Amino acid sequence: MKIRVDDITDQPKILSFQEPCEAFPSLAELQATGESEFLSPLMVELAVSKEYGHIRVKGSVTVKIRFICSRCLVPYDAEISSAFTMFYSEGNRIDSDEDEIELAEEDLVSVFYEGDEIDFAPEIAEQVIMELPLKPLCGEGCKGLCVTCGADLNEGDCGCERTTFNLKFSALKNFKVEK
Picture 1 (cartoon, rainbow, N blue to C red):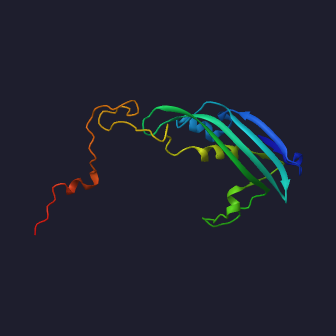
Picture 2: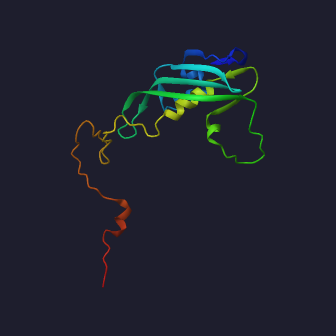
Picture 3: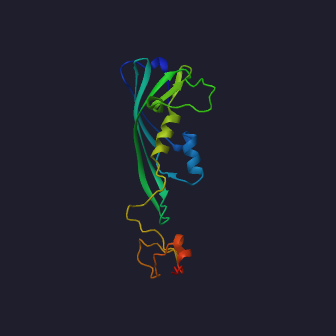
């Protein structure tokens, strides 16, 4: 996942590799905490070239992951795929003493490196993390669990009475206006 800067030319150099999630500390932490389970190694393809004083990396990453549905709590498998373009520049641009710095749009796809090698691992892991769903769903039509008995409503109706009662207005249930 590293490349020597001297090996990069104007012609794109194609890099294709597979790496287990353990090779990426932030992804290994996600797996260790149980947030997701990686079922396959990360399939990474990168095209690296020099361009106008910086290094352009156009790539894609794909991985199969097992999630737990946030509605019905059933595990399901999904494939995460991300295509990205990053620009690497030498040095460290953040030299400010200020607490907050406003980022321009180009700063969001810019990465700074120091030395004679570039490690792509942090940015690849970041691309996978950005593609993870906040609330994983096994399907758009997932009915979830019964609030009374906890049965999976995707497997059939449990027979519990469901009233659409909104707790926000429960204090107004017996409210009467006197004239």
